[in-house]
Image 1: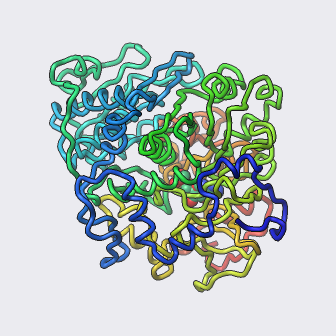
Image 2: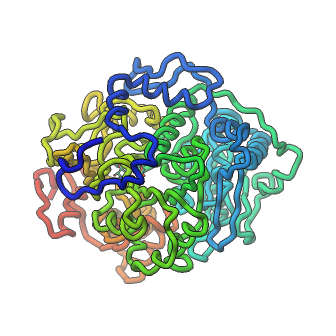
Length: 631
Ligand code: WTA
């Protein structure tokens, strides 16, 4: 272990108790092992899981940047998540524990979850779903969501989960791009006591999308929905038929076969379908969760993200189940009906690990310490943070008020594309509030300047990854060119993250933020292009530009600049209508906080909107180099 007294700045050291409880104490040794023998390190991790046939090669880098992992290996991630545990003493252990917003709860042992997933998989088969077919899943945070994912994985179908907070156009675009055969949708979801009519939103999206043959509807709210004859079917009805047998043979997958696609925003244009595979993704999520949260057999683990985003895929569903953990999932809003909801559930369920986002911490911090102090939070052992830089003030509040000074905070940096934690502390690491410390063993990263040279300590630059890792995205589905251009072209041999960062004298990484057109709103990743096209799809709008400006709770707030079509009269109601239109097309999270009607937008001579000029102006800063500005 490092000698803390030599570290600069404010350092929080783990207590003796944490150190004595933690399985792996010598991170430097593990890093050294992985550095000297990358393939050996990952082979050792992979061999802790079940393979129908062992791999021939750990890493195949003969066609960079299309890296392959565990080639020749035969596997199915769903087998390792369920069947493996259902055969052991974990059979009756809780795999999933769920609380609804209204306070009801459901729980599934490994045995029960496997049974439900088999039934679900047989239902999908009866709808003609085959290996390689795409299935879109659109629900709130309910147990059927992980079940649907695992059922797809079991039969080799590729799932594409669309976040339940997205709306019509976002769903349509993803259905269309993935050419999904089946849509699994809930009738609705609960959000702060209100019902979000997911099926009605899906109906509108389906009018625009042609490939979906069947729609499976999950009953959650029981509100009346439109059921189109011959297309729409209730899941619970099919699950009660003999076709939904409790046994379902496992599709034997190649390690490199696709497991899922997940759409995410990037630089310009449409969201991209990030593709992950059965083998490498499985090994990466299993191993990172095991080490970073030092998981123990008796742990109750809670990742408070949404399964519709990568954090939920990797660390609510796959990672925890691969580790045989009890994963807790909560349906609703953190402050519903009162700001103590989370703390009440931690006490009630005896949660040991809480993994959440800075925006949630900042949001709950606003309500003061009395809310958490009313509850016994002593079951907590470790805390986690993800999604955006955590400001030291929120870090310290989380550490002191929630963790009572005893729970180290795992500030994990990673992305949809990386699939797994990339920069992360371990429970025994000396921590600096706001820094994720150092890369995970075997992950080689650096910060480069414009010329591709490593920056000096404390200088800002582009964050890159310089070695392959098993859970890395394999490509952009249907767009390998864009995969190369967007991620692997800026610096030869390096994966470009899109973030800027700096390293301090102790080699600790500090993430500054996105350098591209991605805005992180409450930890959710949105593209300026998506917001702009939602605005422009309104019949009064001719052009639009969106930027993110700092916001105390959300991290970023969306500010939009709109040019109206000629002849359209400006009214205050119009602004509300435009905001509502974005919420309808894309989702409430994408609703601009502020819209300004303008006559022109700053553009380059080639017609690209110069968002940095808008941003500088809004912040009262110097806009910098304007030589490419058209006028
Ligand atoms: C940001 C989320 C600072 C970063 C898992 C990254 C973070 C983007 C952190 C990916 C962190 C994620 N500290 N920034 N601990 N974690 N980010 O794809 O800008 O939704 O590029 O994946 O979130 O967002 P995504």
